[in-house]
Image (cartoon, rainbow, N blue to C red):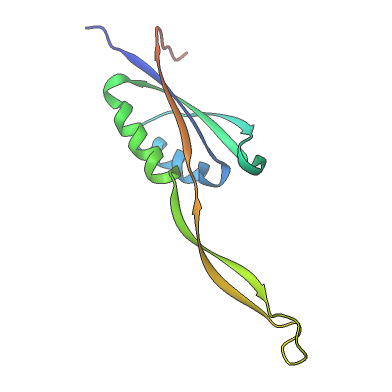
Length: 116
């Protein structure tokens, strides 16, 4: 029986790398990391390569989406009071919902996959 193999290439934010790869590894997937940068504000990214049987591609995609996909998190930002003699220099921390994460994923056919 001929097995069809795929190469999953995922570009994820560096902050999501450890949790995503830990989950992939604990699920039996081997990952190769390439450091990369780009995108908005040139944030540091990781490009991960995962060779996988076609029947397991959806499992890999689900893990990437769960651990590196877009999500809303509260980020606390500092707000300084307007200049007035009574409140000059007073700062406050305000929670703001911010979209974080996100992955760009490519799935490609591969002709041969070998581990030496």
